[in-house]
Amino acid sequence: MKLTKQLFFTAALLTISTAVRGGDFSDANFNYKYNKTQKFARVESTNKKTATSLTIPSKITVDGVSYPVTQIGDYALADLQKLKSVTIPSSVTEIRSGAFNNCHALHSITIPSKVTKIPEDCFAMCLDLTEVSLPKNLVEIESGAFIYCEKIDIINWPSTLAKVGDYAFYAAKLPQYVALPAACVEVGTEAFRATEIVTLILPSSMTSIGKRAFSDNFRLTGISMPVSVGTIGDFAFFGNTELREVTMPQTIGHLGESTFERCDKLNYVIWSPSQSVVPRRTFFQCYGLEWITLPDHVTSIGELAFSECYKLQEFHFPAQLKTIGDYAFNDSNLREIVLPAGLTKIGVSAFNANQQLEKLTIPASVTEIGANAFNNNPRLDIITVERITPPALGADGFHQTTYDSALLQVPEQSVAAYKQAPEWRNFKYINSRPAGIEDFMPDEDDEDNTPTEYYDLLGRKVSSGSGPLINPRKHRLEIHR
Image (cartoon, rainbow, N blue to C red; front, top):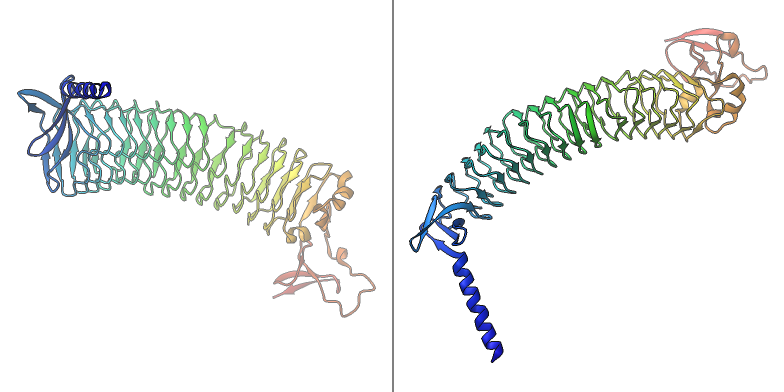
């Protein structure tokens, strides 16, 4: 009996509470929730699933009481495949997540001035959305708000906009020129990825650029970056294949990896004076990179940082550089390498396959050189190593051709040590090599049937070729055609 009374009392309270708060209401076009206490109504859905045009009323009247329509609910008008236009009254102050999601035919939208936030997925997949009028008091565009909006030609950027969330405009077509307002301090992960922007202006107030925030913009040719920024995330400008010049901010709190990776036509870079490390893969596969000057306080160049920069022929190594990472300059085209005093470590394949490399100077401070560090450099002819004790040299540190023909110059008192050290002992010429025909006299006991070996004018053994070659067996210079 007591339990029955308790259940009845609880049900009565719920009824009274619902009556106080409000309830459901429908008219010819929409279904609503209304709140009696706070005196507002929210659009929850529509029965007009095939409508091409909708007008949301500014108020509804229930039992003689008017309730202003101030909200559009979660996914309230989503998936209306034929909807081309919708009129939102000025009474609306809040639009909730996914409200117009997947309205493929929606052509334009004007959002009332009292709305301060475009919620996540609000206009996601509105494939025909061409014109967007953002409210003048807008503060934030949330995650995925305009993702895959493929036709936006006109959009305004309110001066109050402070944050563009993750994926906000991912794969959305935007106008060619985008200048974010001075109030904008944060751009989230992949916020403007693959948007077809041509020119991008970032405000001086910006503090955070998220991971891949502006990556894969295949038409982007210019960036105006802020004077200082707290964070630039990994891959921030990855794959911008038309980007040609970059002046980095004066101050960067944190610079992620692969920032400009695969920017094929990037030619000229002014490095940020605040950065002492070039992160891994920063300029990986920047095939057109020719000019970059790193400040002398840079201490580390990371893995693959300049790998496959085919046009990079000259490079100033910073005076305070301590380490060069694995594959850092692999497959570039440096002609001469003079490494700075103070450098201690050269990574695996760090300078592998620099086809134009002719001269190399390794300072006395280097104690470790990784495997294949200078392999596959066919023109490398003179190597100077200043360290008295041979540095540890990994397997195949140099190519066999280099071992056979290049001149290794070491401290005079260290010749014997280098001739016995692993890998270094593979060098045929340490501190001297034949300078004339008299240096190529064959041993007297050579048999007549021993194959003739030829040498070029630099004393390098060659198997064949055209031009002047030295025949030591006959003690003469021969011209081969």
